[in-house]
Length: 380
Image 1 (cartoon, rainbow, N blue to C red):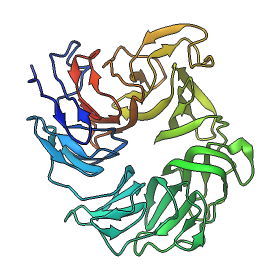
Image 2: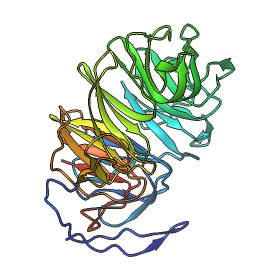
Image 3: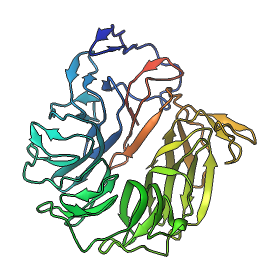
């Protein structure tokens, strides 16, 4: 039994309570670090997971509290909080590893008192922020991706520095200067996730069109060097996509609507299969031969048809609180950790060697309320 943690008052009262978990050891996460607010994103560097979000405190497995200003690091071998603790004045929404660099993106303006708005990077060797690397986009950045010497920024900005390039831009990893030869045209919206695969830059989010072509709304591919629309990928997706992954020749995406879906596409954008739920799917990862999807749903639907409140129109197949697992063909698996909260899961990532995976979100408990684990969960 994990010991009961008493109430502590931070800026507001936050309760981290613990009790014996009801459910199989396979289904439930390991006891690990918890946070006093949502965790929005997670990324692995070996056995270390870096997490970001609106949180300002972390609680270690001994029950002690530590200030962590929107970013932290966790040792996934034992679930313990690590010493990495820079000071940011706003939320981290995305993290990306490339070489010796940890790139971060979000709503912040200052990092350790340095003016580094919306995007910054840390040396993984020293833990120090690179004060010379500063692209300075004009507004929120939701996503960052890397490819060779390019760092792609996706978000809601209009400019990077003094250069106009809305929603999707590329800067150089060497000096943060804008890549002017990369000129994508994302119309009326924001880019939320990106991935460089199949000699393409896949982009997803909430945008109306690409190059004024509405058949490429919300999910598209562009040339990673020029930004020109790749006509060969047409997914025809009408709802927001927050996270997707590319595995071989298959792309798995979480569709975030009133009633959402986990959907598999081929490299032409054709739907291979989908599984409907009664709330948005916000995150997806692959763990071994299984797919893990997370979001703010409670039930898996018999079909992908949903009503005005997200309800399953054609009936419910099974209850799944915020997380579900399928095989690679979309068949629902029995795994059910029974997460809670309205927001649910924001992001999922798998350890590079596949030994575990991490969930980031707004959840408070698992096991139908019997195991407290706020914001971050680690599954074997």
